[in-house]
Image 1: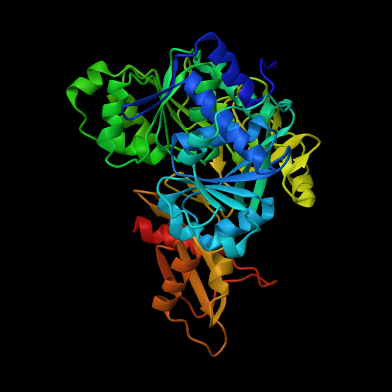
Image 2: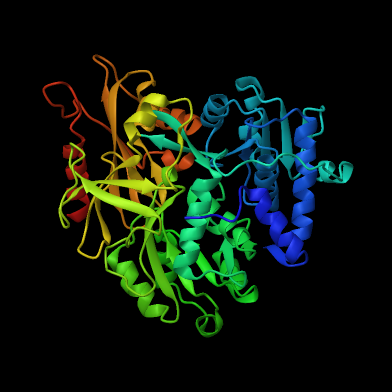
Amino acid sequence: MTYPYQNFYEVLASHTARKPRRPAIFIGDEKLTYERLLKKIDTLAHFLELNNIKKGDRVALFLQNSKEFVISLFAITKIGAVAVPVNTFLKSDEVAYILNDCEAKILMASSALKKVVEPLWEMTGIERIVWEGEYEARDNKNIGFDEIFAILKTHEQVELPKIDDLAVIIYTSGTTGNPKGAMLSYRNIFHNCEAIGQLTKFTRNDRFIVYLPMFHAFTLTVTVIMPLYYGASFVLIRNIMPFSNIIKQILLKRVTMFVGVPDVYNALSRAKLPWYFMWFHKVRYFVSGAAPLSEATIHRFTSKFKRAKLLEGYGLSECSPVVSVNLPTLQKPRSVGPAIAGVEIKIVDENMMELPRGEIGEIIVKGDNVMQGYLNRPSATDETIVNGWLLTGDMGYLDEDGFLFIVDRKKDLIISKGINIYPREIEEVINSFEGVGTSAVVGMPDEKSGEVPVAFVEPAENETVDVKELRKFLKEKLANFKQPRDIRIVKELPKNATGKVLKRLLKEELKNEHTS
């Protein structure tokens, strides 16, 4: 696959040269043209250089959905630095770990997240914070985006990054502990743009709506970078509630591409939408990712929205993130489609031997979308990427047409409302609480969220665990979406001969409760 650009900045500069007044971003009543967007990017890039940010340095984005997120992403990468989007649902301890791991020098932060951000001065090596929104100008270590745009105006041209340079680090938790930074190059991300564009016949006249968190790899690549890659536009929604505003913006801004997660499609399939929305919306494709769609949701949704295609896909952060998508011309129930252009998928056994079509095994992936590796973790990289093939840890099979079917996920992974929750991370926090001997966190089926975490806690010998105090402790240490729905104190967890907890039995217990 060939690519017309070497980096993000070239993309915008090219479209600005041709159509400077073309809208790039819509935010409420505001319209940001390609020309205005590029000027703000140049200004912020100048600021970063004045603050001694150089090629390869990391700058973190702890920003809610905003134009400042987009400006920061392109300004950071213009000078060859690396953007690190951070999950805005995380707490201070969790954010601090990421900032220290990537050695971020500057943090772009939303003032709405001030309570989480303030403790980071003492916990990290951050040298300066650039604030989106109102903030307290106590010293020169804090500055606002508006001040930067008011003071600085120009930026001398610099040597731009090359296509295989590191562009973005996306942190993704693992079942073995702390989050890992997946290193994505421009080639990795551009591959997704090219392949998905070919599939959907995407043009500069298309328009996305962005309401999912922009820090997520799915949102970042498919709904933020891809529209700009094609000289198109997107409608930026800062807050998902009320959802009626999203419906309104789809109509008013003539949105043609809608990207969501199963929870959104489940709600849309049941919602009573105005008759005029069903008649006048311009959506060509509804794209679903991040978690599997249920057959019931697919049936309800496709019966309701007959004029648009629902495309379900599969991916992971390490693949920038898209691996496969159902075809507009052919879709199969329960399938996530064939591999996108330029990507190979194989199903292998435990010895990495390819299995025949229809047999279940581990899904492995090869292509320009596969990450460069995990930051600071050569061993984890070597375990995950073998001879150029990425071992996903997910189980599935390919049918005779090359359509991929997912039959299981990484053993311990919980997906709640499209967000990955990794039990080991929660268990480590629980195990640090006084009186806890060991714990096991597993997913319990939930009609609204797909799954929710449930914690089984085994007290240490001759100890007791106060559930109320444990919950209070967890709220201080973990993001809200990681909080266990239920905490159960048990005398002893089921274990095998080597002392490993048999989570399979706990999952069966919860499944039986759910179905009874």
